[in-house]
Amino acid sequence: MILHIDMDAFFASIEQAINPRLKGKPLIVGSRANKMRTVVCAASYEAKRLGIDSGMPSAEAFRICPHLEFVPADQSKYIWTSREILKLLEPYGLQLNYASIDEFQLDIRETREPLKLAADIRKKIEENFRITASVGIAKNWLLAKLASKLNKPDGVAMLTESNLAETLANVAAEKLCGVGQSTTQTLQSLGVLTCLDLYRKSASFLSQNLGKFGLNLFVSLHAEDSFSDLEQDANPKSVGHSYTLPWPTKTPGFIRGWLRLLSEMVAERLRQQELTAKVVHLGLGGPEIGHFSAQKTFSQASNDGYEIYLRAAKIMAKIGQNMPKIRFLGVTCSNLSSPEYAPLFKEQEKRERLLKTVDRINHRFGDRAIFPAIICQTRRSGQVPVSDTL
Ligand SMILES: [Mg+2]
Image (cartoon, rainbow, N blue to C red):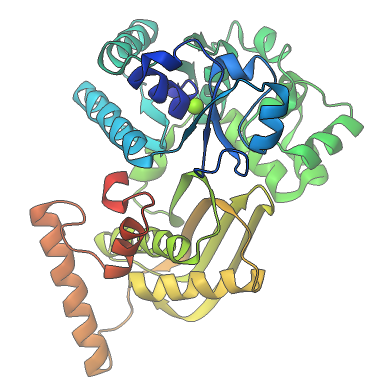
């Protein structure tokens, strides 16, 4: 079982908790300070009730509600809160997945009373930060994430064998994470309207009609293994890391910094397991490009973060000169094998010694005690400081 925690209107709620004057008012948080020329990156529930939501141009939000309160986003506050919530969850001693800045997942297969745990976590979050979270509990992450939306805000939903069908029958298929506009249209044309319709379709039906995405959807919907099974797999077929940014960005230095960080994280795990990879897969998502994913096989296997980064960047270059806004980034390596031979060249040998030393330093002094300078640039650009996200 997975317990998925999703903060309610996270950025807006934090602003309201800090400034009581904003409490109970329709409020938007904008990604830029110019309130008429930005995009809503969070809306309070009071604003949501009027039909305002993230992704909407702020000018449109003000047309809907001229007396809307506006606050420019301050990432440091949100990141601080997110980290503190993470710290609050750690003592439960459960496998923990940091899914995004306002989403956390716990592996609760050993937990006897999940609802009690959910209540305890929600109470602690509210007491500590004066903001609320919604919780979903289900047999896998996809259904748990869906469940967390069912009783929002400040609610809990648990999907069990006995209520699963009844619950899914009342939820539109498009509510499921990953099911976007075009998928919804395809599904509708096939008569698949609710999550239950989707749940009852076979793997072959979904892969025939939606391709690889359909197959993944089937697997994710029916999986009974949680995220930690993937982590603990002794013989992984692939190693990957992904991250959802607080909001879409097209700042090249920032995107590259993130790409490098994810590449370094993947490389570190490959080295831990004494594996190298030939295939690099890049996944990008954003409001303008939807979901972009591509992979490339390289002749030399690698477990060097810089090399994996260069390869991922090469794949990203396919998008062309005009970088679209990116919200989601993922780097995955596959076609894994153990290194076949010792380094052939002096330079390679030197590089391997360097990486081993970096791993030893990080092992001894904690994650990211030492890291490539490019990752630091994301901090200087005023965006998410990378060390804060690990
Ligand atoms: Mg949320």
